[in-house]
Structure formats: structure tokens, C-alpha cells
Length: 221
Picture 1 (tube, rainbow, N blue to C red):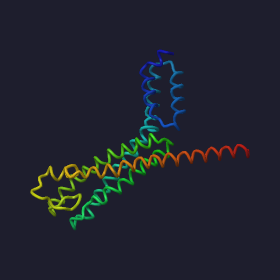
Picture 2 (picture 1 turned 120 degrees about the vertical axis):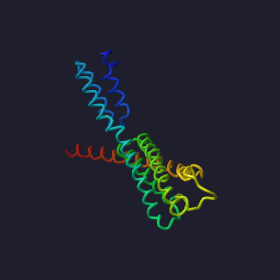
Picture 3 (picture 1 turned 60 degrees about the vertical axis):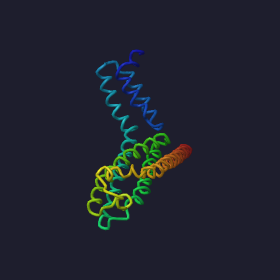
Picture 4 (picture 1 turned 180 degrees about the horizontal axis):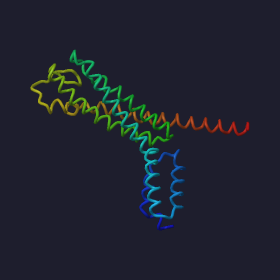
């Protein structure tokens, strides 16, 4: 038995189930117990791989899935804001791309924490969404910023013209050189924390309601 705890199949499944939320911990323990009952090495590896894939979906899949979905929405919001203002060349996308994506990140953290009843997983989902969302936003700002500068001679973020000659690097990295990235962090990070906290509270309330409802059914039955 001690050899089994140290073989590749056991290490793979133990690593995969370590990321499960509290609501799925019993399932992870059951998978590890089932693996321990299998003697054939090939069957152990096959079972461990299948259970590890399921564990990823149940655990890390929530964080990555909601995080990537939020990033896509952030990119779509930035692109829509740019295109809606493109004809006029202003006033810039900053008033849209700071608060609206913050709401998206809040919802991603809230839903993730609510489904898993875990503040930690809600925060992890929100941070994945924040990092991926900012990368997606940066890509949109870089591409659309070149379009705005070519058409109107202004920056995409605030609709202001450059003080001198703006080269491509000035346009692409405008969000960093102006320090406006700080505004995104200041707005987005608290949204993630609030979303994770609210989601955990909602998940706990729903779980408590389910427990009371099941207890009432048992009494009535």
C-alpha cells in the first residue's frame, strides 16, 4: 500500500484533486480510495488519467473557464466602445473600459464562488479573469489605437492628440506610458474581491437553505 501511494497514478490524481473546491472534496477522496483498490498498474494509470481530467473540469475548469469567458467579454466591450466612437474620434474608451469590465470580473468571481461556496476559488477565478482580461484589453487597445491615430490623429484611451510625433510604440503602449493601467488595477481588483465575497455568501446561504429543506423533508417523511 505504501508503494501505491508513491506511484505515478497516485501522484497524478492527488495533484489533480488538490485543486477541488470544498463541495467536491468528498468526490476527490472517493476517487483516491477507488484508485487504491486497483492492483493492475495499467488500469491504475487509465483510471487516474480519467479521474484527473474530471477533477480538472470540476476544479480548475471553473476558474479557467469563467476567467477566459470574462476575458473575451472584456475584449468585446473594448472593441465595441472603440467602434461606436470611431466615426467621431472621441471622447475615448477609458470611461467605458474601466467600470464595465470591472462589473464583468465581479460577476465572474461571484458566480465561481457561489457555485463552489469557496472565497479562494472565487478569488482565483477573478484573478485569472483580471490577468487574461487585461491582456485581451491591451491587444484591442494596441490594434484599435493604431486605427484611431491613422484616422483622427488621437489616442484611443482619451481621444487626445499627441504632443509631438507619435510612433507606433507610443500608440501601442499608451496605457502604460500614461500610467492609466493603474486605474484599471484600482477598479478591477476590488471588484474581484467583492465578487468573491458576495458569491461565497450567496453560496453559503443556498447551502444552508438546502440543508434546512432536506431536514424538513426527512421530518415530514
